[in-house]
Image (cartoon, rainbow, N blue to C red; front, side, top):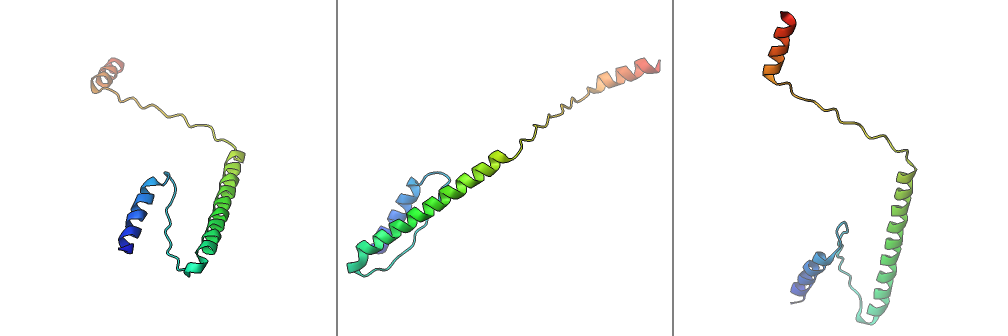
Length: 95
């Protein structure tokens, strides 16, 4: 029964996650008398990971902003010549 609940919650939480984020599920075994302490330690760990992620994200944004912008390349338009027009122009110049 517990396994079915776990699997159901995994799918439900996975559907609620934000785009571009990942869901990590880790099983933890804790003695009942230490559940509150373990929960606080896990919450502190996730806060540190979140802060690290924010720091890395800001660093990358600063680096990208500091890079000189390259001018956009202009796309060359290629116009396909119509076969009849090319032949007509060649005959005018030949004669």
